[in-house]
Length: 376
Image (cartoon, rainbow, N blue to C red; front, side):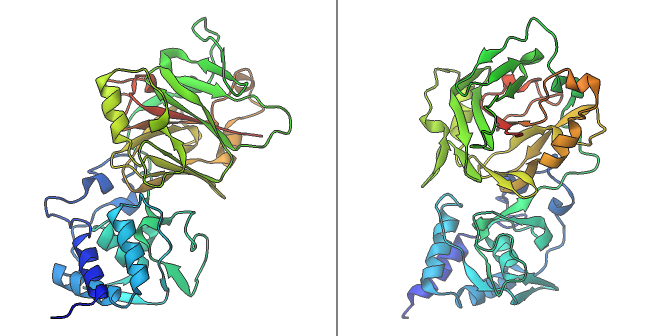
């Protein structure tokens, strides 16, 4: 029987779908079994809208209406798991598909098929800033590329105590252990007690060339130079097809630790750091969890900081400028006497730290990042 190229692409795409719930290969890396980013939007429902046969029939029906070039681009995105650059898949926004008793928009359905089988609502998704549909409301055509989307990470209230730090760690103490050292950018780097790092980048007046700088660390040793970020979005990765950004794999490291080398190899596609209108977002593009500590992720009245676990495929607003300025408390004498680290975010790959782990401080983690924001 004669088979068209379009039919072949549709069959290949269906075979590349995400493992379904309960089939033994469900992508736990995509949603995990718990943790700090498992908020309201990420809770897995036991209900199963539609059977596998219904889902297959509906998916085939939709894909067969898509142009061949669009199918090829979608297959490239799915096969590379988002690692290769792929164009937007623009389809009519008003089309909804019925699966069981539920109606799905086309972007939601394709994300459910190719990334997150437990996905239920569009409110669980966040569009990436690289997408043509980003920021648009009610467009006639909407991008349905599942790898132009991320899963929104909503925190529980109150967040689970993955690890807590007293707010005192935010302030630079008068300690002989705190020795400043020069950095390549002309700033000052402070080492706080317990190996926690607290960086400040000092600039010339009026210098607005970058919105943040990134430092990569392996345990207590910083590797490579500080990476200055001017573009709104930055990929930080170890191995990324068509990668453009901060490639950790190109840095020269003298660390011979087997654990460091093992974790380094798991960084893979890494993270995407994006400055948006409401703050700075971190998208976990890798296959393993990342762990984030930021002063703006927690209750401003809290005397503790949490380390938040973010699973693969999830995005979290890691930094909020407005909240950071309010946390500075400029009229608070105690705070003004010490350097403020509210403009710093720490991110560890694969391994967490804190009370739930043997590693109490991030400087004990094999591979981690320090992101220092320009507050001018």
